[in-house]
Amino acid sequence: AQSVTQPDIHITVSEGASLELRCNYSYGATPYLFWYVQSPGQGLQLLLKYFSGDTLVQGIKGFEAEFKRSQSSFNLRKPSVHWSDAAEYFCAVGVDSNYQLIWGAGTKLIIKP
Amino acid sequence: EAEVAQSPRYKITEKSQAVAFWCDPISGHATLYWYRQILGQGPELLVQFQDESVVDDSQLPKDRFSAERLKGVDSTLKIQPAELGDSAMYLCASSLSNEQYFGPGTRLTVT
Image (cartoon, rainbow over all chains, first blue to last red; front, side, top):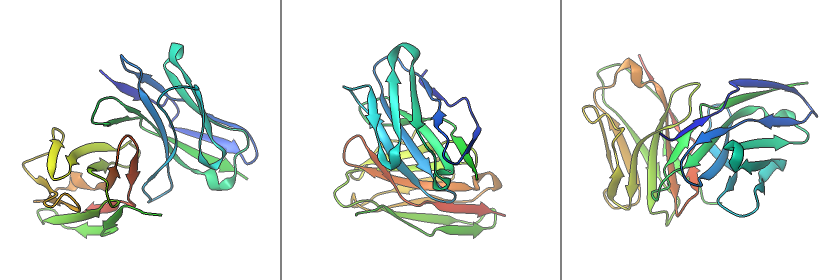
């Protein structure tokens, strides 16, 4: 069955430090991959997506993610985090022609001043 | 920039009462999704519409939940009767193709 795993429930990073959030998926074919961000009490905003082509994708707010087929991973990175990046981050996989998404449980990012 | 609208933003209701949520998708988006998100978890799809037709409602608890999109534009999700376990964020999203745009959600608290 298709699934998405975000191994880290929460991560604490100092402001200005680099960030990597992990995402692993289980899916038989090449998936569509997404990262969304959710601020407290808000809806979800798309950070970036991968459909095909270059496996390193750039998104908004200085984020990037790399698709690694051999590892079934799509990790999100940012070279230098800002306090405003504190939020919950969700990885999702699009698995069928209806573009339904399978979601990870999310990783809460905490920024230390 | 066009946005998905949802109302109300917050709703407190007593168990056994009826509650309804409204969603207005981005103009021209044929696909509309309703999700439930429990605190600390990812969204769970409840129902997907393509225009006015239901594409998938396999995860919708049909004994108490109903959803409609009569004219293929805005949509209503109803719960009757509400139960304590229904306390969650209810998110609406719309899409034109493969990218979903989310509204701000409705936070439901059942007491």
